[in-house]
Length: 167
Image (cartoon, rainbow, N blue to C red; front, top):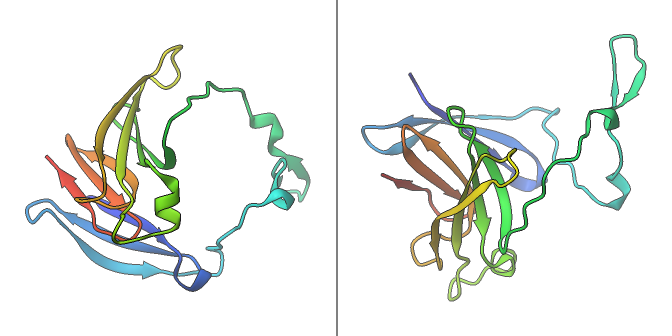
């Protein structure tokens, strides 16, 4: 019944995974270790990288992954979507967002980036339900990137600020 949080970090243009243990009684995270490996790469996407992915099967035959792609509904938001977490119990999507993307890219402590969390229910239906569950201007939490739910509690993470645990 232990809950772990794995956070991808990019120090010095490399990639690491930070492993934390959630301590429910203390409402805190305990850093356990940092995972590094040469196969953890930070891929930069650009126009030269776009296109169908390629994979090799056990015989070394190259196959295109394009056949696995299907059209899905598109939702438009008036916010910059960052990371999406899936609730393993309900299937709801919890989305960390930036209400003003320019503030996250050009950080100014006098005009901090706001925070927003969106919950999307029934994503595969004709009309998914979209709810803003947290929104504020950066005075409490700056630059939300991710949100996740555990036992009815919401944990919100940020780029360079702190985390927020909501009852």
